[in-house]
Image 1 (cartoon, rainbow, N blue to C red):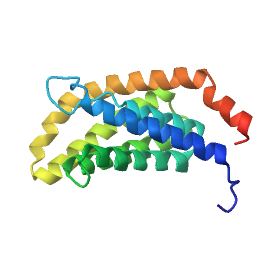
Image 2: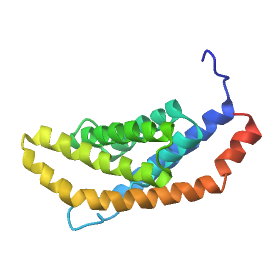
Image 3: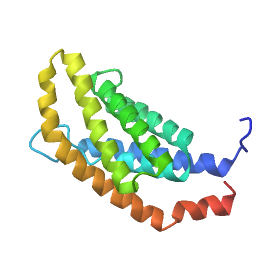
Image 4: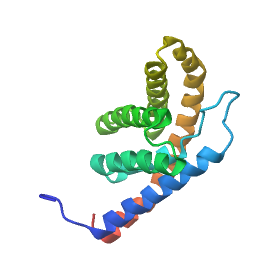
Length: 177
């Protein structure tokens, strides 16, 4: 890596975050949906992407997000199926929005998470509409949007509490990255 110091501790922390994100993503798929209609989840694995974005940086968080989508779908047995594409689109849309909002400091972690959650759901519904060939899938977003807002706020509040504990900052300070 030109211009960046190779740091084993940073790579190890990123690997731990990835393992946690994959474990949470797979475990969450076994939980019952949050609402009367399927597909609604808390987004616990996305909490780690948000923390990584704030604490480690853009490229590390992008790696974490894409690797999480790939590995979770491989472990679920949904790789290259409709769920994978919906998950990938949601991850890409939410990550892009969160990265922009995080960079320019418009919102706190809670606001960034809420916007990311709502865009994640919108992108998933859009991919569903493309694959199924009908725009009527967008009616489902009317149900998903308020639920996404609530879960995004919850994950943002949790990210705020974790960042306030300065645990990742102490790890970075102790190991020089």
